[in-house]
Structure formats: C-alpha cells, structure tokens
Image (cartoon, rainbow, N blue to C red):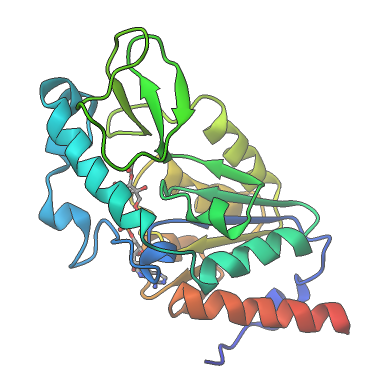
Length: 249
Ligand code: OAD
C-alpha cells in the first residue's frame, strides 16, 4: 500500500517535532479486538447500561465481571499489530512524544510504548471499590465473582465506566500535551466519547497540524488538516517508512 502524504506532513518528520498520537479501538481491530460502534461493535450486541456503568456493577457485579472476564480472555489471545508497533517506533524517533489512548487492552504497552496516558484505564488492573487499592492482575478466571480484596470489599475492573470521571490528572496531562504539540494524529477512534474527543480540536485550536488515520472519516475529521483513509495497521507503517527515509536524508 502506498499512501500519499502532503509535503506539509512530510516536513514535520524531524525528531524535534512535538507529537501526540491519540488512539481508539480501531488500532486494535486488526489484532482481533472488537471496536465499540461499528456494525460489529460491542455496543451493538451489549447494552452499556447493563455492563459499563457503576450502577450496573452495584446491581449485578457477577454479570459485569463475567463480561470483563470474556473480554480479558479475548485480549489475552491476541498480539499487537503493525499499527501498534509503528507507534512504538514513533516514540523512539520523536524526542517529545506522547501516546494518549482510550484503549484498555494493554496492546500499546505490549508493543513497547512507555510515554503512554491511558484515559479509560486498563482492563488488566483491578481495584477495590472499598479501600481503592489497585493492582495489575492477569487472572482469566476468578474463583469467586466479584473477586474480593483483603479488606473484604468487592474488586472491580480498573476501567472507566460511563458516568465516571477520568483517572485523576491523566486527562489534564493529555490536554497539556495536545496544547503543546506540533503534530497530532487521531487514529482509529470515532471521536464520539467525551471528554477524550475534545483532544483533536484542542490540538487544532493551539496550532497543531492534525491528521486523522481511519478506515472512514470520523467526527475528528472536521478539525483534521489531513485525513489518511485506510487501516491503521497499513497506514502507520507507511508513515514509519517515510520517517526512516527522512532520517537517512
Ligand atoms: P469506536 O468503536 O467508537 O470507534 C472505532 C473507530 O475505529 C471507528 O471510527 C472506525 O472507523 C475505526 N476503525 C475500525 N477499524 C479500523 C482500522 N483497522 N484502522 C483504522 N481505523 C479503524 O471506538 P473508540 O473511538 O475507541 O469507552 O471509542 C471510544 C470509547 O467508547 C472507548 O474507549 C470505550 C467506548 O465505549 C470506555 O470504555 C469508557
């Protein structure tokens, strides 16, 4: 696949460019993780209010855990794809680089990204609703649902549910990075869930060059300077090729 990049975008391929990559479920689609809103999306088959709200967990913690257990099982079977791997190479190339993800699947960590802000938490974290203790836990099947903390409180997945605030400080840091960057990529997100979806327009308003990478135009396209239509697992490695060539010039 050969994608056409504008000269403006290519001119930004220097290590000094301050870069933010903002990702959503689409970047993990080619690994086999379902997205939320497409025709095959999770929210077409399941109801948010039954599974992804604090009220749902209070009413039916076992059902919520079973669903997250099923998703953990699905994610445990898959691997980062060339899109994730390209983003981890971007982190090595650009001196000032931040990855902001809405994804909870941990695939960016597994691809090697470390400068990573997780806006919606992590499906592999578990947190006590009573004492707040949190830890990473890769268990696929718990003996008791919901699993219990040593304090006796119920443990819940460390993800952000609808109606909950984002993890303290993380969104503020993402806003700061969006305000201060020169180049902002919005990748594989419908840009429909707020406050995360404010980030592309924040970057644009502060002068960044905004590029959307998606199989179809999303809400983020309205503030994008350039839309690269295609699968992120194909478009991002192409961008990486340009970067590698730029560093040889
Ligand atoms: P969505 O499911 O809303 O959007 C996925 C986007 O990825 C769509 O715009 C697709 O066109 C695009 N897409 C699909 N396959 C692609 C591919 N191979 N390459 C590039 N793009 C592709 O997912 P998000 O925008 O991540 O929130 O959803 C945002 C939030 O809504 C999620 O973090 C989750 C969900 O409810 C919480 O869990 C709090």
